[in-house]
Amino acid sequence: MKTTKKRPAFWGKASGCEAAFFCDFHVHTSFSADSEQSPYMVCLRAVQLGLTKVGFSDHLSLYPDDPNFGLLDRFYTSYVETIERCRKEFNNKLEILMGVEVDYHPEKARDLSSFLKDHPFDYVLVSVHHVNGSSLLDKQFYTTRSPELGVRQFVKTLQHAATFPGMDVLAHLDWIKRGWRRYWTWLPYDPQILLRAGLERVLEGIIEQGVVLEINTSGLRRGVEEPFPGKVILSRYREMGGTRCTLGSDAHRTDELGDGIREGFDLARSLGLDVSTPLASSPVERKGARPVQKGKV
Ligand SMILES: [Zn+2]
Ligand SMILES: [Zn+2]
Image 1: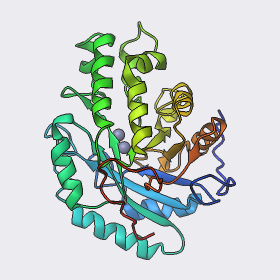
Image 2 (image 1 turned 90 degrees about the vertical axis):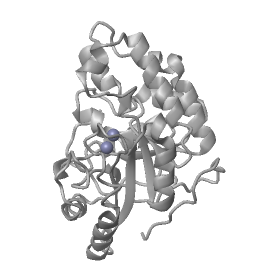
Image 3 (image 1 turned 60 degrees about the horizontal axis):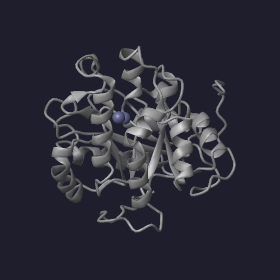
Image 4 (image 1 turned 180 degrees about the horizontal axis):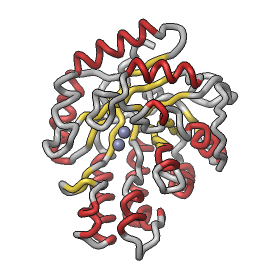
């Protein structure tokens, strides 16, 4: 993979999006507990980089043990107003989407759905950060269970997430590989283990529902040497009939904005995947999905 920092603003036609595709749809701001960057500074940096669209995706967590608990649900109005101000400020220079990254817990699915019904976003990313109450970033998750059990529980949670009706995008699908590579060192990370453990059913579910699969490029800077997910899983997705992908850097700081997007784009196109915005523009009927918010872009 190329490591050049020079990122052209124009990469030719990308199916499902307009010709100039250099967009980042997974970006955090100070509306998340783990970021201090202001939405304004993100937009400023995005324009400097030549991004054509940016999508904010701050965390929505209804899980009390998560640091993001009680943030976006409480500050929703302020989030909307702040993004609206950015849209006015950067009018004609940048298209801005108001997304959200849902911290998915099976037992919170009903509450999450009802929150999203009353609080519209342009698009909804769904992520599994916790499995059976443990964070996938905590060493404890890996030291208190065997890889067999951990993988089984992780995949089961993803299978549940894949049925969530309000989802537009499934984000950083194989996020477990970050901790796996660090703590289950006696068992080299192998995406085939995840696929055999039931990840294929997750892919099948999102293809059926018309959900977009995210290529989260943060893996390239977080020691896993490939995006979440990587080539093996993306190839399987394509073989199974999946076509739609979106790209996000998962930036928590302005210097991470747009990071790895070019590499992710090249990877997607080399596998015959379409790179598009996260908006559910597919004609596929969404089973029980809420109406798509068109946004003001
Ligand atoms: Zn996440
Ligand atoms: Zn994120």
